[in-house]
Image (cartoon, rainbow, N blue to C red):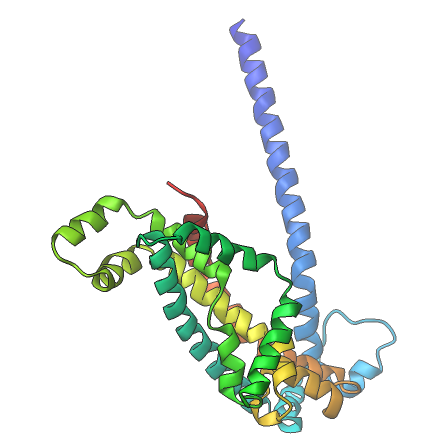
Amino acid sequence: MELDFKKRQLKLQRQDKILKIFTYVMLSVWALIVIFPFYWMVLTSFKDYGAYNAEYAPAFFTLEPTLNNYVEAFSAVALDRYLFNTVIFALVTTALMVVVITLAAYAFSRLQFKGKNVVFTLFLALMMIPSELVVITNFATITQWDLRNSFLGLILPSVTSVFYIYLLKEAFEQVPDELYKAAKVDGTSDLKYLLKVMIPICKPTLITIIILKIIECWNSYVWPRLITDDPSYFLVSNGIQEIRENGFGRENIPAMMAAVVVISIPLIILFLIFRKKIMAGVSKGGIKG
């Protein structure tokens, strides 16, 4: 009987090993599928224009890499200006949004006022409205305020987010009520309690929101394209379209790929540095305990 038990145990262990091997193989294959487009983009950016056009079959490596494509990416269009505009847009928009959503999330999670649940339900209902309708409304408003082709016109429609308010509210509600009651007994104001207690405890969620918002701003395309037609206010996403239309994109694909690599690197570095905090913040904000 003991021998049969050991056999079953060994059989289960072998099955677990086979399952793990299969899982890792599938994950490796999926990782290659996901990484390959980025590898191809980087590879193409280092290929010589003539060598690229002379390829009859795709070459998966190059023996003569060149940096000329990166030089052309910055000389053909104002790519440095687009990068600067995007950094300003992302940082200012994110900073303003963090202030707005922090105050809103705190009000919904800790303050008691009449109709709070109804107001929050209506807030959540806004997530069901198609984004195209919001874009049309925002465009009409910004145009009436004569804010087209301005950073203020770019930034204002993005300074709040119902989803981020909800995510931060869930994180705030995980902080024990006893802390709030004790703080009120000591005469602590709501603002001081928010700054000294709530924000430090919920820092992972806030960091996650900040990073996700920066990525969202960096990838923003429809709104900047709609509200700006002056190249002085173009962001990198619109700069790519400008490269295709008035630069070299339709002919010089390697230089186009070099521009895309330059635009993509900051986000990749940001995600790699803070990936653990992003996962921790999402988990903390999505699990109520």
